[in-house]
Length: 208
Image (cartoon, rainbow, N blue to C red; front, side, top):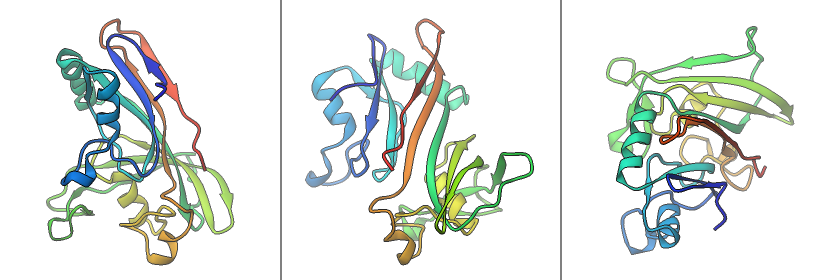
């Protein structure tokens, strides 16, 4: 496992699609990015997650103090992430260049692990997006989650009528079968170093 960045305080890894970020339930779900990292760096601790089918940049802290510091940074929205996705259909370019999806989300308890839009009980959820390029019945988009709700990007694009190709939960079967995998990649992360305050920016090219 070759890290994107490694120092005595934190680790930045590039997670492949199909690998859990943290252990799941059952002995068959113990192999995950955090376990693999901890086998090499015993003090590695998770501070955020990526869905199993999502690839891209994953930040881990080294030790409890750094985990607390980075967790606070996430909670205060001082960690800025961007993703690249390929969505079904053609999303029209907003006049401002960036569009905004502002739809509150909550867990869809009868259908876990799904989330859903709920205008009465949902938590505020905001996604910025812009078009990168068009393909045949598809649109490559850049996504910026201002909030960090579970499955936020996947639900927001699905509700717009443009689910992510390969999404097994929120895309209809014909769209879920396209792409070979879910075409969602955590491509950029920016944050202040928890020890030095230096602004760090890391980028990862989508493998699709």
